[in-house]
Image (cartoon, rainbow, N blue to C red; front, side, top):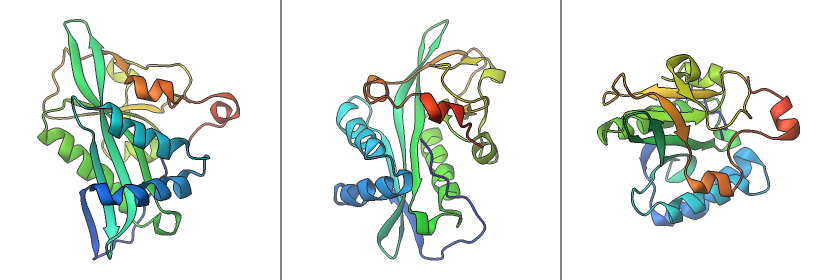
Length: 199
């Protein structure tokens, strides 16, 4: 679930901070505009907020002059490793308002999200997205590093991982999304979407 916000220009007035309750309406509008998928991604964000009481998601917004222009969420998932289950994060979704894309806002959100995950001692962050975009932002092709995807319904290279400072070599196995992703059919791609690989 990615709406890319990479680029060269930056905003001196850009602020990245934790989402507040009063931001939630703007976050819904942002994802509806960034993804244009009939509300599926805004519904995912709302459901992840509501479902993850044990470990609250990390939800960051980017603002310009106090207007929310970008959002990223990290939510609790698991790695089914041989010795034991490992608590990990999924980075999804990442969205930037269309008129603010290609200005480095998505890049900043990804970097700040990884720093937040690292500071919480989370060893791994997984996602499904563009290998070109995320490969330049700290992610690697996960299957090449010994991880198994939760579904076969994704283009080659789209299943990716960032290994953080708490990562240990025994942490390999199958990535398992939380029930919320499955309930809203937000794992992998289907039909024509799967036939059009992400670049």
